[in-house]
Image 1 (cartoon, rainbow, N blue to C red):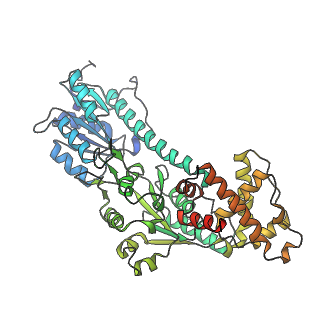
Image 2: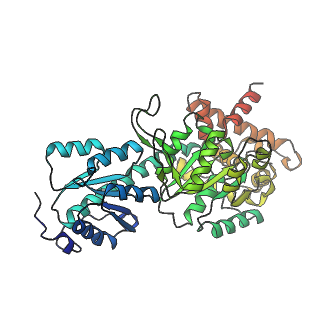
Length: 466
């Protein structure tokens, strides 16, 4: 058993000789201390209040429950033996109600069976009283680092899956509209307001959302993109809000939702116009209350997430047709950033093409291609129905082949208005069929990788098959 602390309330920060784990995430953490001993609460609060963003305390689980309903916490330090319900009983109740954050159980009376029960109930760590400040600080550091690592790994796995169809950089460009978008991002990004990004498919809505996140105070926290059109209607609530074990057939274990992975950061809802009506109502309530209810849970859980939504649909028309809730539209459209199609800003084609060649040649490990005047003239004249994404795909395909398609710069192309569409349509077709083959013929997965809607892919495949 660790050495005893004569008077925990009198103890301050750990001595320099003590080995305290350093957690880079402690300074931004919000921690709840639950203990019926005033001396222990005072000791923990005094030790933590200079080290983390926020510390709250409660003398019993009833007071702690009220605090949890009012604000999100990253970690709970929970005493086991208290009047009324024990810490273990409350912990089981928390896990059963959908609370996913880490809990460190502390107790002066414990044996191996209690420790095993605590871990089975969902405790992240188990610390015996009396303890020194370095012991509890090390336990806190482990929990915060492990939790952050799990969330980062989850987000990175989603990023890696999205890489084959990654959105193209939008910020490169000299057109008036692109400069206006950059100015809007700089102005709106640092604010907490919800933003709705509109524009045709492939104009760079996700990149704009990432830019908003990057210039905000949330830049160090996760950016979690969600393609609402790519998630089946029957599971989208579970994907966004999480679920409890046994909440529905196939729910073998509890799972956090995307709102929880985006905690403290930005949740990007792409194709928000594709949300089912029932989910629109639930999202509206989340925006209004800043709380989510996991599927199967009895209580709501506070969340701290900035929402950025995007759509290529005309939401005003959808509202008029009764397909999208008017109140949700107004909640999302606090600030609107509209992205013009590439055909309306030809000045951006050359900067984007140069950027893509530099980026993709390095990633593919192939020599860059020269953008000659005839090639640039061709690319600038082409109407780009697929917008920036189509330009990126053309550059990638050309780099893989080692040259631009022969008919991209046909002799006399400046006078041949029909040549551009023919050449680039062929490149687009080859690229989309290649991605579809890599996805094993799974159209939903291919559409996700290509960053286009399933409807778009189906329409093109139908046209190509006659």
